[in-house]
Image 1 (cartoon, rainbow, N blue to C red):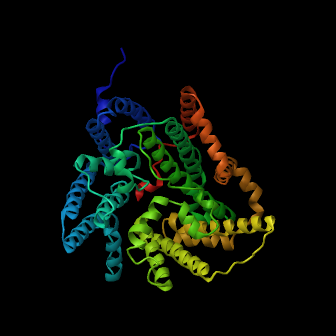
Image 2 (cartoon, rainbow, N blue to C red):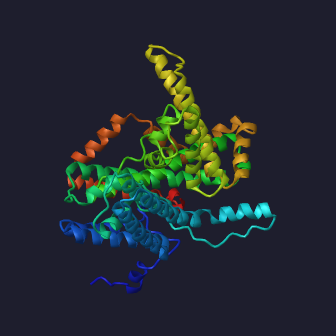
Image 3 (tube, helix red, strand yellow):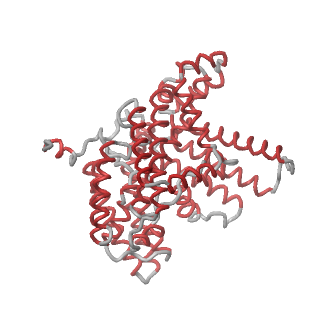
Length: 496
């Protein structure tokens, strides 16, 4: 008989702030295997399936945020009730007031947890008194499930969706654990119809699910975590201790780190959902291959950028009120998008830079001017490469403000790059950071591979035997165990 440590088993039902339950932990992989076995037994019974998954999702969120899982429960109950009232009301002004009430509750909750100390710091500075932050815990993923829940009430108000009949159906949608804490932001109009369909996992869904889980875990643990702990964090902790060359590569490293971290989570979330019979929207599409900033935001964090477009930009008037108003709406949308990411002037500046770039590109596009017009293939390719490089470096420049702990650090990184570059240390730098640079090279090469190669690889996984798929998963897990250099690293977007 195998001895069972009851105390250790009980500890798995207790919240530990330093040990959140995340996809790249060994405990989650073990737990998910057991979950999948029970899910397979229950998937044909609609109510049993929804109840089981919802309870597991609440447990998953409890292990990430402790008692604050009640915030998720409360938000679910309130929005379910308000959405029903909006749908049943026949008077337009009542519908509008109910929607405003929903917005006030959701955004008020988000504002309290994320922006109270930010506003307190501003007012303290203006009043000339010492700033002492309030002890406010930020529940993991509160920005994600708030936006997701808002999509439900707004779509019902707009007449794009009918409310669900049972609060359990809505709770399942809001709390569905694969995307609960870091996205993708799944809209009710896309997800809720899937709830009522029979659970079915096709060969293609299984293959794509396994492929995405493996690639996501590889991107997160093997590439992102390693270059973060062994290089990027050191640069951004003390930029002045390193040359401009090292700072520049630190920025390149962070651009790759945040992409591999966030897209890695999205890949795993989409893959896990596929194994359970549900489809999530694509969230990343090789964004650093973009030729302009507009294309970048069509490829980066797609679920957020389209949410901001449909629920904020269009609500502000979109492009329906003239060119100048369009540019202003783009700028406001991105500034608020920056503020969504964090309560700091750094994030506002990051959003403002992207908003200004989007408005500028929109203005340029409206002129109908085409530079380097040519039919020569190699010239076209060269122009495309230059456009990609310019867009990539603008995005990297903006990442400095996103990553730096404060504006002083951001200024030091930029200053080191432009005033203390020291190219002569290049070979010593390469010698000292061989593994980091090899992983960065691997990450960027994989990112810029043609789409066809990725499709072929996915098809190979799909068409392989079940034993081969299992072997691939085991191989990736072993690789992850062998390469991790510290404890489990939380995903970057958990803080948002």
